[in-house]
Length: 348
Image 1 (cartoon, rainbow, N blue to C red):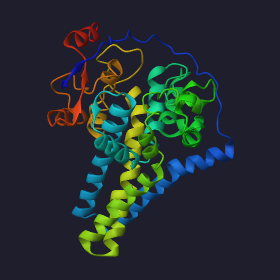
Image 2 (tube, helix red, strand yellow):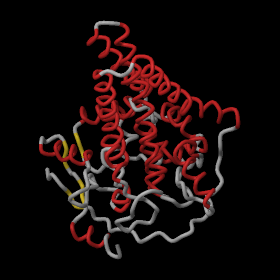
Image 3 (tube, rainbow, N blue to C red):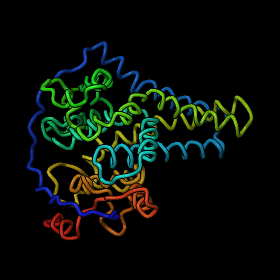
C-alpha cells in the first residue's frame, strides 16, 4: 500500500463577484427555532458561564487546564481528522478500530453524528458560496451591514434553516435494513438529499449502527473528564470541576472554534490559491483547528489529507495522518502534486 497518492483534481478558477441570493428552502417554525437555538447555543453558553463562575469563585488549577486541553485536543482531532478529512472527504484510509475511534471522538464534540456532519459538509463543498451552500456568509450579502449579519449567521444561526438536521437520524433508522433503497430514492426533501451524498458509508451497517449511538458518545464526552477529575482528586468536587472544565467549557469552546470555520474561514484572511469561493487562510484559525484554518488551501484541494502547502504552515491534523501512515495505520493518503500546486498559485 502506498503512503501517498497524488490528487487528479486541478485547481478551480477564481470566484466571480457578487454572488446571487440563496434559493428559498424550508425553515423551522418560530417556536421550534427558539428551542433549537436554546439547545445548540443557549445550553453550551450556560455551561461556559458555569466555568466563568467557577473561575471567579475558586480560580483555575493546573489539573483543570490539563483536562480542558486534553479534551479539546481529543474532540478537535475527532472533528478535523475524523469527521472532516476521513468521513467527509476520504482523504485517506484507515483501520476499522481507528475509524470507530475517530467517530466517537468527533461525536463527543456534539456537532451532530459523523454521517450527518459529513453530509452537511459535502453539500457545502458541492455549492461553496453559491446557492445551495448551507452556511455561506456571502449569499445575497451586498452592503456592509448585510455582510456583518452574514458573518454572525454563518457562525451562530445557519442550522436554523436546515430542518433536516433534526430528521436525518430518524431517516437512517427507518432505512437501516435497506440502504440501497434510500440511496436510490427520488425524494427531494433535504434529509434524503443529504443521504444521497453518502453512498460510500450507508451500506456499511456496523458503521451506521455506531453512528446512530451519537447521543451516547456526546454523554461520554462529559463523563470522561468528570470521571478523571474524580479519580485524580478522590472527591466529588474534583469530578464536578472535571465536568465543568473538560466537559462544559470544552464543549462550548470547540463548538465556537469549529463554527468559526464557516464565518472567519470565508471572510478573514488571505486567498493564496485559486478556488471558486471566498475561502481564506487564517493562521490563528489553523492553530486552533489543527489545520482547518488553512481553509483556502483546503478548498483548492479538498481531497488532500494535508493542507500545509508552504514550509511555515503548521497542519497538526495532517502531521497526525502522516504519523499514522508511518505506523501502517493509514494508507492511500492523498495529496496534490507539485505541478497542481504550482498551477493553483498562478496569478497570486
